[in-house]
Amino acid sequence: MLEDVQGMVRLGLLLLAVVVLRKFIDWRRAAASVNNLPGFRTLFSDRFVWFPFRVDGISPGLQSEVNLYRKYKDFEEAGWDIMAGVSVLPSAEVTVFLADPVVVKDVIGARARFPKPMGPYKILLAFGPNLVASEGEEWKRQRKLVAPAFSEKNNKLVWDETVRIMEDLFDNVWGSKDTVEIDNITDLTVPITLLVIGVAGFGRRISWKDEAVAPDGHQMTFKQALHIVSRNLFLQLMFPRWLLRWGLPVMRNFYTASNELQFYMQEMIVARRTAEVKEERHDLFSSLLDANEGLAESGEKLTDDGLLGNVFIFMVAGYETSAHTLAYCFILLALYQEEQEKFYQSIKQVLSDGHTPTYEEFSTLSYSMAVFNETLRLFPPVITIPKQSAEDTSFTTTNAAGEKRTIPVPKGTYVTVHTPGLHNNSKYWEDPDAFKPARFLKDYPRDCFLPFSGGPRGCIGRGFSETESIAVLTLLIARYRVEVRPEPQFAGETFAQTRARLLKSKLSVTLYPQRAPLVFKRR
Ligand code: HEM
Ligand SMILES: *[C@@H]1O[C@H](CO)[C@@H](O)[C@H](O)[C@H]1NC(C)=O
Ligand SMILES: *[C@@H]1O[C@H](CO)[C@@H](O)[C@H](O)[C@H]1NC(C)=O
Ligand SMILES: *[C@@H]1O[C@H](CO)[C@@H](O)[C@H](O)[C@H]1NC(C)=O
Image (cartoon, rainbow, N blue to C red; front, side):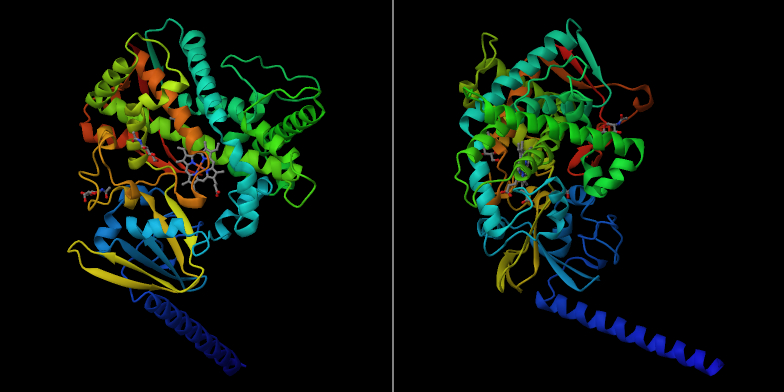
């Protein structure tokens, strides 16, 4: 009997040893497949979302804020502008991280050779079939249908409506107050972008002081539903529908709100289909509907599910990224008063008589754009862009001494653009840690600046986001000076400490500043 047990234990240990050896051999082989390029050597890969922390040997923790704070450092330590992460579990895998602009350009430009791995995007299908979570022919079909909605006319609508929203804020919410204190800058930027996506995305104007009574047949107003859904999108990604329906109050509330939002959108679909005279409208949703209706009943057409899926995805992809980028803009301007002053002077010069800028003047506001770009360089909301090699290929890169090295990249290797590394690559950027918007007014290393990715799968909402942000920044800074709000408990801080405190970031769907109290003072 005892011998049996001992025998079993011995067998068990032997099996374990075989498995461990096998894993070790696989891991060595994986590292060898990229010629042992230096980088992370860990148990889990950075795609292992359940362990988003950095622990040497265990996990690189790149799906957290680490990536942002480390920027180019990991590459500096590895010695090359490309590094390899080799992990053991669940299976031996290689991820090649890129901060080399030449290689990055090649990768994002070649959609067929470097498609997106669909694994990490699958959860986005919870909203319905959509542009972000598709590849190959399906992606092509979706992109062809969705692209025309992001038109010049939509950009103009974004501009005009953003101006209206900002003026509504100044006139009816901030009113005659000379100083406006904000506990947390995202409390200002999130509602702004929500109102913008409400009207320019969904075609529904919402004001800051909206009535709170739901129309007949609804349990919530459009604004309430939009607000609850957008703030809790992660619930949709984490839990199945039935659990949301019967779960905790916050889940049930989300469930109701997302149903309400769908009802509103279905009502809009019906209203538009049955309208006698079609109004000319340029919000994303209306354009998408029109484009879809125009198609014959061929395989090209999106189902109502596909329509809703895409509109939801505009919200996921577009509203947090924009809100949080604006938040970083205001924090940086508050910290760097001399930069804010230069920006203000440039606005005064362009709008010398103090008039409200029109969409046609957009191109003259290049300083606003430079502030926006410099913020995105330092705080890109999307910190990794995942791709996967569809064929055996190779990359050539350099080290600090200018030596070249060619790395084989076998088919199936994960290839990830490391945006914060690229944006801080000191071979291309002068003084990369500094906040200097004016660097964008000169010749700058374009291939080293990719907050919106690029190539065929680049951000489709870039124009939308730029238009909205330039309007917000220009209108606000023209009227108000933004400063860090003094708090007694932080009175003895140095500048570096204040900077670190305000810019402390966290990653949810995108990167955001955790807590930044600011104050707006009328000029
Ligand atoms: C500061 C604001 C924004 C940033 C930094 C940003 C960044 C990005 C990035 C990096 C990608 C590529 C993602 C990947 O390859 O995994 C992307 C794709 C996309 N973005 Fe944006 N985005 C912003 C605003 C917007 C807005 C306002 C919208 C829509 C209203 C939008 C809609 C999309 C869509 C639909 C895609 C997928 C395109 C495709 O796969 O063909 N984004 N964005
Ligand atoms: C960015 O690059 C500069 C110059 O190489 C370096 O001194 C700095 O540490 C980098 N920043 C981060 C956060 O890695
Ligand atoms: C800002 O960056 C975009 C690319 O995202 C570029 O097209 C534009 O020219 C830049 N403009 C300024 C003024 O920095
Ligand atoms: C500030 O806003 C962020 C993002 O919305 C939130 O997570 C955080 O809890 C807020 N902090 C405070 C102190 O309100």
